[in-house]
Amino acid sequence: MTGQPRSASQPPAVAAAGLAAVAWPHGAHRLDCVSDVHLSAHDPATAAAFLGYLRAAAFDALCILGDLFEVWVGDDLLQADDPEAALARDVAAALRAVASSRPVYLMHGNRDFLLGPAFAAASGATLLADPCLLDTGGWRWLLAHGDAWCVHDADYQRFRAQARSAAWQADFAARPLAERQTLARALRAQSRAHQAQRVRAGMVDTGDVDADTVEAARQRHGANGVIHGHTHRPAAHRLPGGAPRLVLSDWDALAQPPRLQVLQLAPGGRWCVAPANA
Ligand SMILES: [Mn+2]
Image (cartoon, rainbow, N blue to C red; front, side, top):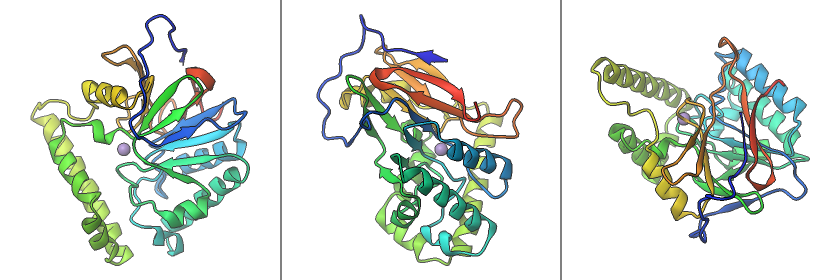
């Protein structure tokens, strides 16, 4: 899948309203976007694929748009003695090797929104605000994880607002690591049960972003197009105003065929999708 900005009916980019913008790295030809890798010690095949992708690193810059980890309960995991901690240290070291010569950007997802300054320091990654702009030179992408645009899932949006508050995070961080891990597992199981119940009840599909909400954000921030993940519904859509909305795939090395998808961006709004192990 490849794409190029349209010239004739290209939606206008107006001045951005105070949103942080990532500049296209000087001289870069290719900036890779990935998201929803969902790294976990329970899925060594996907972890190995991601580490292999970082080692090969044929990109000039890397942008991870959320849910790099299946769950992140705090940066103190880096010091812990369990398989998830060992994987987290391997990933941080591999990112750091990349970041020694190329920019690595990291955005929070809904699973790993507690990735903090200690992980950023260990990995050499620059934490991105959600959303933020990427200026590729004459073409601006609005980058987001995507969960904030799933406005039809009112229960999730309530939880999101609560979990992003300083009070909730302080209370959570004060609990022992093992308790936080148990709590995260329980929240995950609860969320799965909730989704399954909605599907059984034939209720409206709340698992996707709302296109009008995304289009409003695009216009508000003066972007030419939008890139997000989270929904695990990879596609290249057109927003109501005609601008591209590119949706990143999740990663699963054991799926048939394996899902290890990378969105490669080039200057000026050009893009293509390729397998990570190509
Ligand atoms: Mn997500």
